[in-house]
Image (cartoon, rainbow, N blue to C red; front, side, top):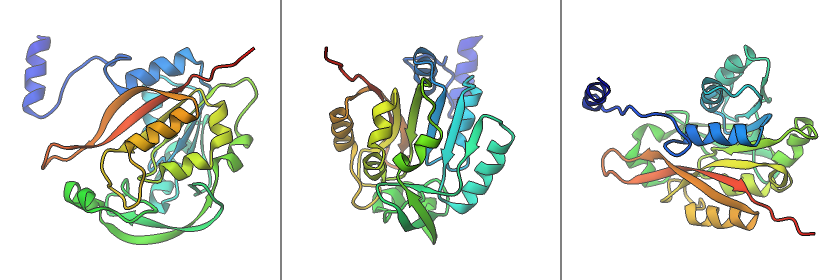
Length: 243
């Protein structure tokens, strides 16, 4: 019966598989959340709350703090999180390496909105990623905001999904990263946004901060070419203490 169900789903472009720590991003997150007894997740680039909803769907009951700069997405996020007493939607805020007003390019599909100019490869793979307007938003460093949410003795993790702006977020979160148990971050294999850092540089930089790569999972693939464009990476802090 299971093979029949799998065959039917494949005909519709879906795959049936068990969620385990080795098979999927969700499975690995479940394992890490439990093994590190995570009580707080910083959700940077929350969009409409998809990541938070995923955490709740798979049983995470700890605190979520979500940051989102795009106005329409933030409104949805705020509504979704408001019914969950342990999910906190921060005021509409961009997270980066500096403090001040910045311009956000808003994409037609919302999820591709970025502070960077969009690249041709991205537009070809996803035409709805095109920008349709811009918005002004206040930017802060995570290190400026995290202390009000972090509690002593409560382990936390950080998720970063910021459409090419990963390096800037990391630079503004060095103190916060020092205390994080693990990081989930979206990384590009090709320049989807002009001037962005690619996967090899991100892996190298996080390794220099004592985060080792534990998993890679496909996130964005071009239907036209079959090329993998973005992946989600899971990095676990393995700081070595001497003495």
